[in-house]
Image (cartoon, rainbow, N blue to C red; front, side, top):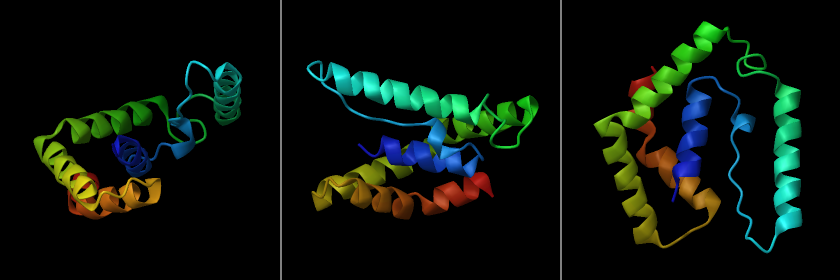
Amino acid sequence: MGADSLIRRVLEEVGIKKERYDLQWASAAEAPRFVQLITEFTDQMKELGPLGKAEGLSPEEVKEHLEKALEFVSAQKSRISYGNAAKAVRKDGVWTKDHIDEIINTKMAKTLEKAFA
């Protein structure tokens, strides 16, 4: 719950194109949809090129940015902030993507700002 929103926000903060991440659901009975999703995502990655190219980052910069993202998601403050956001979503009982994005962005704003300032 909300991890999708957080991943997109962290990628944005470290300068990685959000198009490089996508989370979609397909049941076992939806083989044609699964194939379509994978094909579209693969085409999108081919269009963006190697990680860093579309972002204008050198391989060393990509490594630094990804290490910063990993440091953020591994930090206790980030996990606590995410837990508080998850509690707020459960309390509200509103499970739309827009609402979850709003809660993640609101509850984690200070933590994100401090980490990526």
